[in-house]
Length: 304
Image (cartoon, rainbow, N blue to C red; front, top):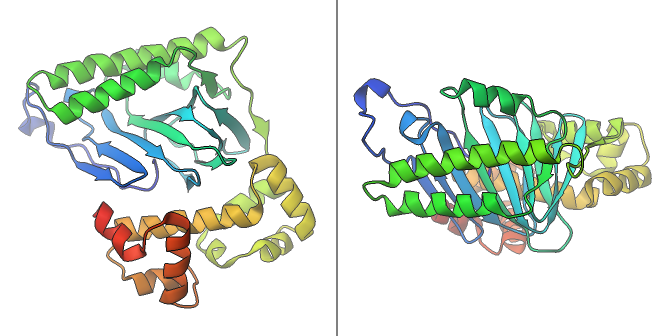
């Protein structure tokens, strides 16, 4: 999902005609995720990428974009955090982040987690852009009819089809999605839009620490000392807010970082294991395969 891939830059628009169908920037597909990246280009009305992931232990560390991102939870339970606010999500929920907002998220519980996500800019649609910016701190709304899922599926199908009129279909579907999202948030604002939970200061401190390079080397005991609370209090508060234990969150974060380095860098597996503070490449390989079902070298082959 968002934050784990490099985002494409805008091509020189003077070199492309409006009726041309652009080449896809990249398609990334593994057993748990498929993601199609597109150039920020007028032929797709600034749709940057669309993806689908299925992973019970999914986690994405803190990051931000220069564009909007919409997530749709088809199955399972999870959470997203934006600054000091925590949002719980479940099947049928939409979640929106705005440009420049630091955010992170994870699956919660033992149910399968299936998440659609889409990144986009609205520079050519200023009025609609303003409406998206005007969505307040209430960022979770229920898509009762599953319309967003059906639109995402249709966009996937059209992009893969690559037919002569796929561009026009994607354009229409994308506009349908934008209007449906705005209507969903506006119609439900007074009743079923979920209010965020304000994170405890100590938990926000822990999350900030874990998302620094220093956090690579920290365990629960070390984190508790840094924020001046007991380990038992940290474990209790972290589980209350985040829905998982501190130790499990650190493991998920480590897996997420390992996947990022394997996917986005040419660093050797040995170098990555050292960066992540493992005793040896052997320990790292065992850890990675235990939690992903795939050896690091094999994972790299799948996503490169």
